[in-house]
Length: 74
Image (tube, rainbow, N blue to C red; front, side, top):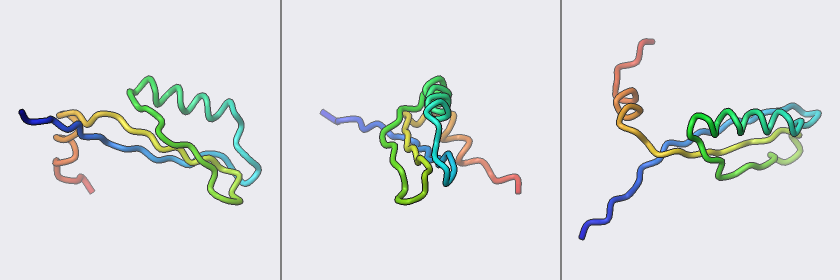
């Protein structure tokens, strides 16, 4: 029996400022990510920054794989 492994794509974003991050901004960002299928797996404050860094994942789809393999339009 072959076990199938899920492949993931990840997203990392830092929000806020040196003055801190409002809970409302964190919630809005996480709500938007959730609507797009992202699941937050880590949220942390880089030391002394006042900002919040969020890490999320979602299953890698065939559509995303194809987009990643397309030539860059730079």
